[in-house]
Image (cartoon, rainbow, N blue to C red; front, side, top):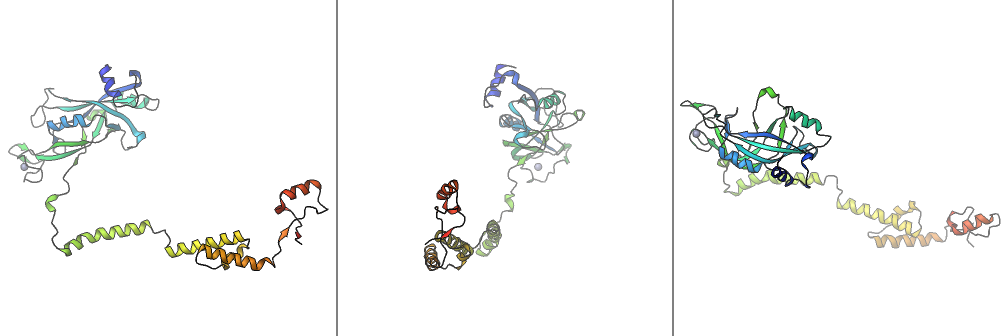
Length: 317
Ligand SMILES: [Zn+2]
């Protein structure tokens, strides 16, 4: 591997990699010949993509996760002058990509497969801003020509041009004998059909247009809060907590907590104190006398330190 090549790879990695840590392989990204959908890229589109694909990852099919990211394009090249012609007689050219992988024990088998030519095809995905009729040069769909149809011995195709973005690539498992071929999956801009846009000029039209959006927003919000309780229920729950807290603080039995009244924490606390004061006189306040004769010395000192755990509590005189 040349140093310049390794430098291009290391420009994309988080740390410098040595040559023996890296595995590189070429892939055909796309070409300018007419495909089975009667579409083709313009030569300029290939040049545009040559820059856009650098740094893009190649993932294994149907696994677009980080774990599935197996390779990355570090260089590209538009290959011309092969002497080969396209179906409509233009010089054939294609975009070649150079990909690298960091060698790991996990991808050793995968590298073997690539070496064996089993996974050599990749599917590309890009955004084409323009689609042009090959017969008249008009924007596709704006003329009467139909792609795939023949006009004076010329088959109409759509030319994809002005590539604005390229996305990650994926390996496609294709039997080697099926030959080279690029699966393209382009995202065309302008699919919003601007010609169908009708300006809104009356309030009634506006209401009609906007009502579904309002309904959707309202039901989305309702769904978001469907498990939430009402402010009233929340308040009731809060007061119940205040009553339990006040009962605990004043030493009232928990069963009496629900009897407490008041609309605020303070009011409930006051009520609890009042009730506690009323019940105190009749309540048996347990206390422990450490001088109880039947306890041993160890027990005595234990219960002196932990009076609440003492058995046989005596009435406080
Ligand atoms: Zn046309």
